Image 1 (cartoon, rainbow, N blue to C red):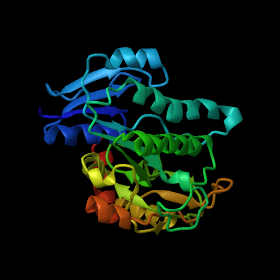
Image 2 (cartoon, one colour):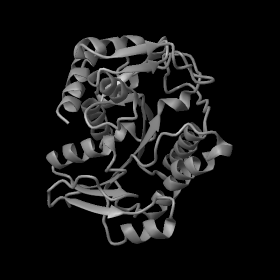
Image 3 (tube, helix red, strand yellow):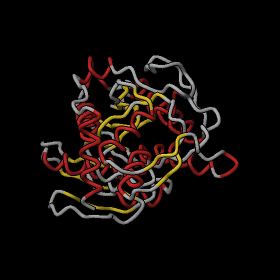
Image 4 (tube, helix red, strand yellow):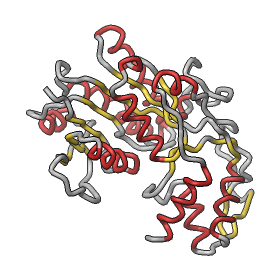
Length: 305
């Protein structure tokens, strides 16, 4: 049997849409599951769009009923650093209970690989470069939900042989990203010749282009040596936020970032960048897109909008 049915949870989001396109090119039969109506339907007979909220077990069970799934990539949920008492429970519900529901709704006898997407936020304020052998230190409801889901999935792998891979993303960027995210915000501010506030930009961060991230997902999905493992997906090349802003400003040739007008977040880790040696060793993966090239591609996208 040709096991090529791929369920992408959160397939209408930024990373999801790029993954869907690449998976189709790799001849997967794609099932896109999202809590909202798709933004842009890709015209292909190999895509099955379904709407369901992973927090709602009955709704999810009904949506997946009679659908044979061989591979899963869980991009579900959203980045939200809200405090627990200000809505953090809902974030944890999505990122932890959503995973429990998803696992319960799948036919394990058919599953060949399950890729869970984590976040660099799981490292909290741990010393850089952050590596997978460091114990997590969540500092928000969002990162706690991710850590809890990952611990649950690792337990399933150890005790019941469930074929999971945990990919921990750092800062992903590229064409089509939500304009509220860092790089699109800076690009838009410069394109509009605005004067806009930014922090002093002393933070060291790790940016990875979307095409490289998608290749990391596809590599992990069918790599049996990766099952049960946590693997960083990032550039491994730290850069100060200020330099990224200046790079974008210089490429576009206009715009006036006002450095120091935004304060750093309370407890913000000033050095968050990855050790990617494990991805290179286990997945034979490494990022191929230099930041300058990725920024140029991203700027071109927003210029043509």
